[in-house]
Length: 382
Image 1 (cartoon, one colour):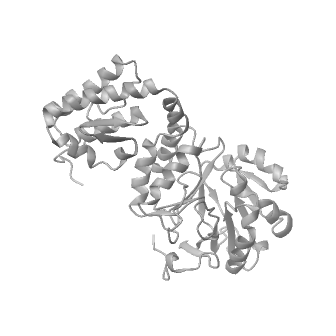
Image 2 (cartoon, rainbow, N blue to C red):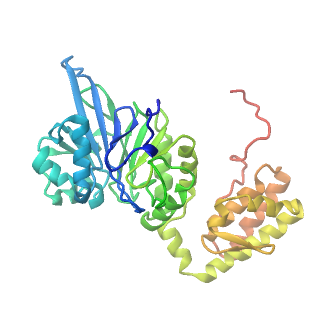
Image 3 (spheres, rainbow, N blue to C red):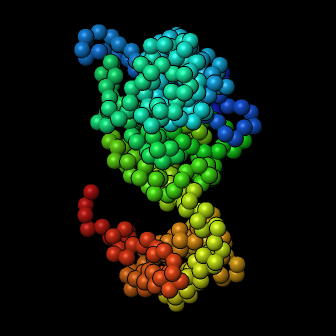
């Protein structure tokens, strides 16, 4: 996918200028100086030929139109791109939160009464109370295999249940390979951050947002699996909050997201300090065994893990777990066993499993069969 041309979003006045993030795909939101939590509405312009009539056609889709408080900025930018709000063909709304789509009422009632409203039935059941016209609703459930727009282009709704709402639905544009994810991959943004493009520093805000608003890790795992199945592969993630993810960060953040403990995962553990003490005891046993095989490299391996610093820290030679004991144990074992032969990794994994059982803790998810371990030499040619 070709990248937007100069000037870059970092050089633009984001409160005045719509930003083309991909071909015919524009960010039309606003940024308050010093703010840390922003909404991201997007406009996708489709231009082409209607396959049914062979005549030129256009289709203008406003994605997650935002709150009524942001409407004046969105209105100005959309008008600059398509000539008027009355030329909107449809609104797509990921889920029912007012910061996602409460401006749909203004748009439908005053500017674009003929625009369709595309969302899940679960979402519609709630946003209809924004006084939206019932005859404009189109359920995404009708298009599990994708939908065609009058220009000949395709779009694919991708359900992401309980991320964070039961009826949340992402939207994939296979032409530009941009995935609009709603709250999934959204995050808080550092007040000093410049521009629209995420970098490594954005992960902390994404993690914090998800640990507050997402209900449970299994919902994230399901959503990430759905994203990985998309073809062609996703090249850009455009969330409804925070900054836009592209390049190598797409895969890196997908990997982190499917491991992230959130919501109930954290609450259940935080309410029981004896639970956390037991995980610390298990990790003590694992590290004592590992040092017999790996010596001083145990500390070197673990201190090299940036993710581990989120949940644990070294106090002398002891690794003290402050939260998320099960995930921390799994990550410690993964790091220690990385690149080691089965004669070393096997006993470490067994010790972790047996120790957890002795303390009546949940069984850690470990690669006991070695299926996920990287082979030192590949026997398969690309």
